[in-house]
Image 1 (cartoon, rainbow, N blue to C red):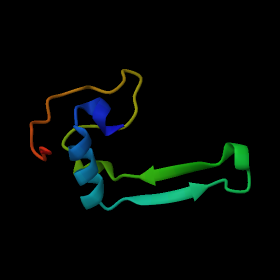
Image 2: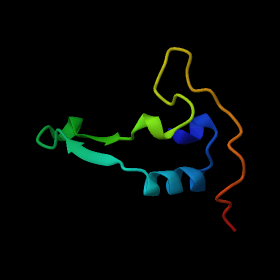
Image 3: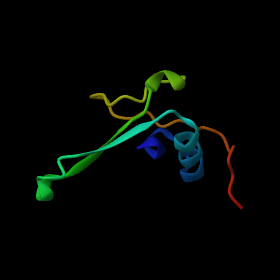
Length: 68
């Protein structure tokens, strides 16, 4: 999801590793329809990452967290 906004894979991985996220497994008893959800606080971003009708706005997020 974060890659749709221009974050690279390593950047998204580092961001999720440092952010105060909350994950939940929901609907385990309904096996074909089980799902997982993740709470990512939006105030940690300087732009809006919430879903909207216009879709995600891709931007250049730089090259920090470059993997070798």
